[in-house]
Image (cartoon, rainbow, N blue to C red; front, side, top):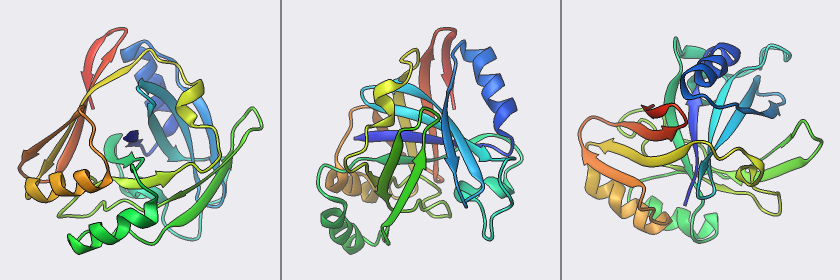
Length: 207
């Protein structure tokens, strides 16, 4: 159910280098988000999940609007959001979530080409990055008939726990029952924020 975690950064190359040095893993070039001014690098987290490190793409012109995931306002790399593959079609999940007061729509179609030429296309909602949720409510994705990115990624890192802190944990738990549950998720009460506990070749680290 956890599709991927999003680590956003103001500078992609230094962040990727720091991850390589600290964790002892290599990240794989994901590709450009053409027109949005970003690109990403990825590594697997086990159980069909992966980590996306996303930052500005110096090979693209500045986009007409803000870059995704608040990249333009960041001063350091930060875990800002997570994505879920719902157990039902996205459109069947949005209605019950709206009834809970969580509006994740609209659903947008996106695409990118991997460096190996494989074309990926998917449908997704957009993350709720602002308070009161601050990235703790997952955005949703449907990879349609594209290969899943995690299928070909290194598996040197394991996601042990995704900790979601929310001022209304009951709301978040109810939402995840609608979307689909994952035993790696821990929900606690407090100011909204998220953290990930990872097992790497160089030990355990927290994002």
